Length: 170
Image (cartoon, rainbow, N blue to C red; front, side):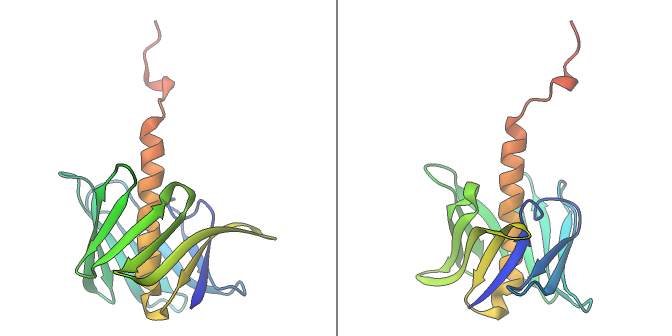
């Protein structure tokens, strides 16, 4: 099992996101943008090799994302339930995402087999998301899924805020 660290509040932003190991060594770079159909994020190894990507594909029946590993589509992630708790499913891989998405404490499973566990940690250099991935081969896809979960969390709370600057003055 390997641990991957991503600085808190970096996954949902449009800026570059560095994924590090437990020793602080940079392993991956996540770049791209969210927001409209067709937007994508790409995950690169630090040597420039593209290892995974995410493409936003639909708004009709809720946002869905296609996940690619080494240029091959490996699954489509979509939200299945919202109540009493969120439940996400990755078609083709038959993976589920369950847990406390709001607190970044969730797991990815293939039936009863643990693929990844997400949690938060505070280190001397700041707050981080910690991804415990059972098999290193799954790490790129797991990082992409974590980015999607963060996107949904960020947009859920963003849509609940009211911007008073947009209302006309009386």
